[in-house]
Every structure is written in structure tokens, then in C-alpha cells.
Image (cartoon, rainbow, N blue to C red; front, side, top):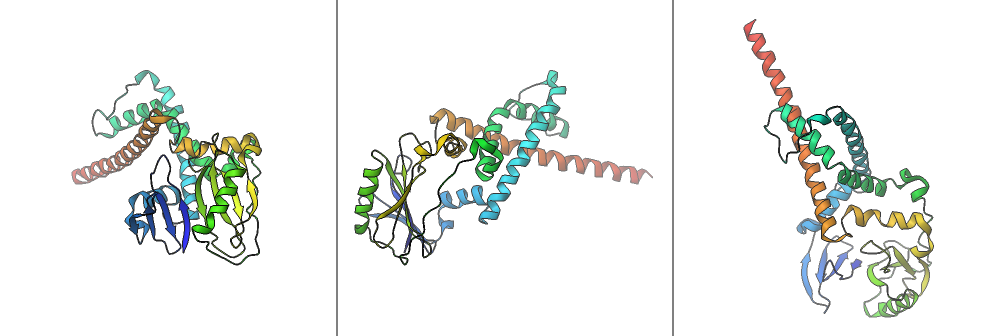
Length: 289
């Protein structure tokens, strides 16, 4: 049975269909199957996203990425403080002058402070998506939970869904139909996700809940009525993932990711190179004795 359908849009011109057994397919807007897979491991765009978001281990992995983001923020803040004392020696280089530990430290410090604003945006938005409570009142939105329904689990056919789509479109004129989530357990509704014009999130945060047996709408969740906190929280993902801001912001976030990888990799190399140098020095001293 179908688990979820993400409808074609500006970013992807085909529908993405995921099935309950973990398989999936891309389906053209004419209804033809373009690509089929039996496991998400066959689609890099799926497992790479899961790796970044959940470390491939579900909710525990998401928490770990949040902790990693907090650690990154700590390193960023302390790094800027340490750089301030040495600011007169600032020399921006794309690559260390040499692969010696000292040169790597200088490059790490200067490149890090130069890209600190971008790194700050990446880390803060990522952390707040995982731990929104850290945003305090700024992100304290009150969002309704999906209503309970009394119908047994039913998977409606594509033909049966048309009245639901029509009713949702009438409820939110001009909104895009973005995703359909089938019930995963008894007592849960069909969830239709829409995107209104003011929403930055590609799939929107407008929800319509329907009874899986009758497809009558039982509730809806309109972000336009949820206040400033909901509006700010809705923008975290599109800013973090460069789903807004055009090509300029995509390039900026790409630079942020590359720099974060570069600084981390060189820092690890520099640390172990220093350890190796120390051990070699001790061995030479022991030989002299």
C-alpha cells in the first residue's frame, strides 16, 4: 500500500510515491512510472537526506545531529574569541600555506572567522529545528495535533481522492497540493499537506485532516492563524536547506557546507599530525638515551 505521495513541483517535476514496505517510485504527471526502487539505498537523494537528518538511525540520530550542532556553535564562538587576540595576523587563504600543524591552525582560525556568519546561520537553524525549545518564546508555537478518527485503516484509491483535493482547494484557494500522507495506524487520519503563497517551506505547513473511510475533512491547521512564532519556525528549514533566496543563497549555503567540512577535516588531520610528531620526538629522545 501507498504510504506517502509528494506531488510534483518546481524542484521535482515528477510525483514521488513511497510505499509501506520501504520501496518507492517516481511517477510522471501523466501517471507513468518513471523509476522504481525496492529500497531507499538505491536512491542516493533519499539515503543522503536521511543520513544528514537522522544519521540513518531515526529519532536518536536526529537528536545526535542537534547535539553536534550545539557543539559546532560552541567551537564557533570560542574560535572567534581566540581569533580576536591574533587578529593582526589575519591572512585569508583557501588552503593552508603548508600541511604543518601550525599553518593548519592559522588557516583554520582565519577561514573560520571569515565564514563565521554563514556557519552561524547553518548551525543555529539546524539546532533550532531539532531543539525548538532553545528558541524560547520566539519559537513557542501552539500547534494542533492531528485529530483521532474512529474509522478503520483504509487506503483510498486515487479516484476517491479527488473530492478531498477539491474540498481542500476550496478551503485554501491558491494553495499548492504538496503531499498526501496515508494513515500509518488505526485511528489516524489522512493528512493532506498544502503550501500557501506566504510559506517558505517547499511542502508548506498547511494541513488538512480527513477521515480515511469517508474522506470528509475533520480538521485543518492553517499557519496564517498561528502567530509570529509559527512564522519564524516555518522559515528555519528553507533557510537551512537554501530552499529560498535563489541561487545566491544556494551558493552561500554550499560554501558554508564546504568550509565546515574543510575546517573539520584539516583540524582532525592537524591534531593527529601533531600527536605523531610528538611520538616521533619521544622515540628519538629514547634512542639517544
